[in-house]
Image 1 (cartoon, helix red, strand yellow):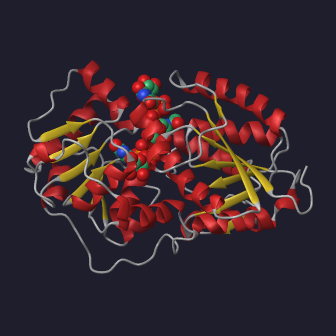
Image 2: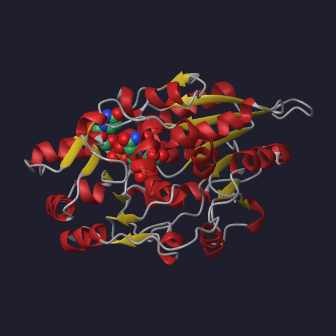
Length: 369
Ligand code: UD1
Ligand code: UDP
């Protein structure tokens, strides 16, 4: 229970790569103030050193107070085990707020565990919608939003999706995107990935690609078409390979064309360096689409829809699906429109999140909206 005058206690639940980066922005803001305390719980969803530890080390994220060690397995098994263990952690700690990020299984488990215990849930990156219910992330984000007490929307479009789903407007805060905060802070700290100079690529002379979305990795035709499309661009491609995609390529026996340079997943500081030094970006990642924009690079998105529609409308992002010809064509003639509006706030989203959590601290035990 919240004690007047005491710092607001936040229990942050993370598990997957993009959440470490989002949490880094907020944890950094927490370190600069005295009215908030934070304990981080890592579900273990991502567990390889280059998918997890590297972010805590490089971005100086406080070490998780608890690590649940639950990675791998199907959606039901993973989410169910996370839910069970998170409930135990929450019963022990009873924080003023549970803070969750994005749309992974760890987000869903954290939000459900907290809401059932009547602990208020704050959802950072609320209101994102692809309107494709076949995506696991869409289920996770819809459910999370509907059990959250405070919903931090990164964009006006996200806010409008929440309103259209009859979420209480008083529960929504339009704060901008914590990933923009991170991009602004870490861009001066970017560093060249080890071994990159041996690839012999000139700055600006390569496409940076990432692929991990289930709809692409789990469909052999789509995955093969994506590789044909990247190869058909006639450019050198640097591909830090997600473990999910590595496994899919191995099991499908898809050969990697010569000019696609596969490297292991890189840390965030290296990733930002690649984003700053590439010519264009091809991705199915949510976060990387926005980082392309933050760093002024044209983006080709290898999905059939995107949650970040404002980038498509602004002409910085081209949606090409898993169509080999469309991928090659878009990468051969990348679009870089003049001007970049501030679509994702002013770089103070993390501070705003904390201000709202402190101001609403006495909303403890309010029923979910
Ligand atoms: C998850 C999220 C997705 C997010 C992505 C970020 C869900 C449903 N999906 O997808 O929204 O965009 O993280 O990267 O939560 N693996 C390893 N080592 C690791 C992590 C994963 O080998 O460190 C392998 C395991 O075989 C695992 C598979 O990758 O089963 C998939 O991992 P999982 O966390 O289930 O989903 P992602 O595809 O990473
Ligand atoms: N990223 C990284 N190393 C990589 C690939 C991505 O640090 O090898 C970062 C990227 O810069 C972005 C985040 O991971 O900040 C995006 O995560 P991912 O693409 O795994 O998930 P999504 O955003 O699609 O949920």
